[in-house]
Image (cartoon, rainbow, N blue to C red; front, side):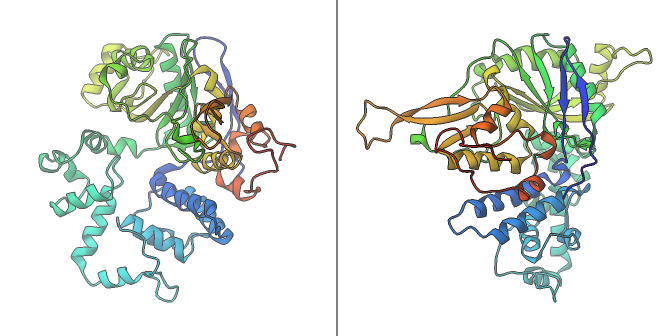
Length: 445
């Protein structure tokens, strides 16, 4: 069980009286990709017809154990002595870190302590060195196993090499940003720094926006890699319906909230998020780099604003100049714009953690409902079509409050501090007794 020592706090942002109570547990930290891989394996096992409860619990224990680490895992030896990380899980981690497909036959036997593949490669010092460099390069934001391998094969020997023209030019724009700010982005962000950032943003955009810290902060983590903020605005009311897919309720269970594949320049530039939030913050010397622009989600790197001795913010010209000189502390920031009617569903999606979101979306699917960041939906067949026709439309069920959404799923409200796999693994993972597509007959604790 995770420690319950993380405190509750009350913080206020923006121009009005905007008190927000926040709770939480832990953050995904420096091993986000590894934990995501394990959670995807758990999700597959938990939803397959021949569900193996032992495997589900094994994945849950490994996720909890690795989630407590403060350093990135770059070698399977780092997790060997962790309680809850067994032989099979270590083998999956070893394959993941090496950029290889998992081979169930290459099991790490307790008596051997190493996998067959590793035993074969241990006699080749050059292969071992390349594997080590490949893993190190993957700690850079946006660089995955394939890119790291290409770089190593081209002669790259360290993260420092990435800044040389030969290797820097091999990187995509987002990877170049990751290499340029690697030292900053690996440094944990403190709660007070996130609060300072949220206050600066609220004071430098329209007072009609409501800005709320979500993600690891809302789950109560004392430090985290990057800051997530949810924005709402009274004029942003359109709630997009899910893609039809003939009423499939399993779609998007693991998708990233507010991510869109649309890259129409005019649509993005004219969006409320860019026009009234990103562009003003850029002009005021907050934003250093844009990683991913979008009409509903913006991701980038910002320079943490500083106050002078008298408590006022730095001058705008000073902030811009210091970004140009790359002075100060730089943080990854995600801005998410949610429709007012979807605030509750958006808070659930953006608070996380990922395993909790997968669990409640799976519960919704079992009830014949679809849950995404915009709300809870029910598929309605078109009565004008033949009975065997699959066509129909989505009906909005709930989305304005977290409590209302969870109640529709047969659950009591779950405080953000409990939204983690430690909570899920100690609760009933099966679907409560409810009417399919409707409210539960009774609340489930």
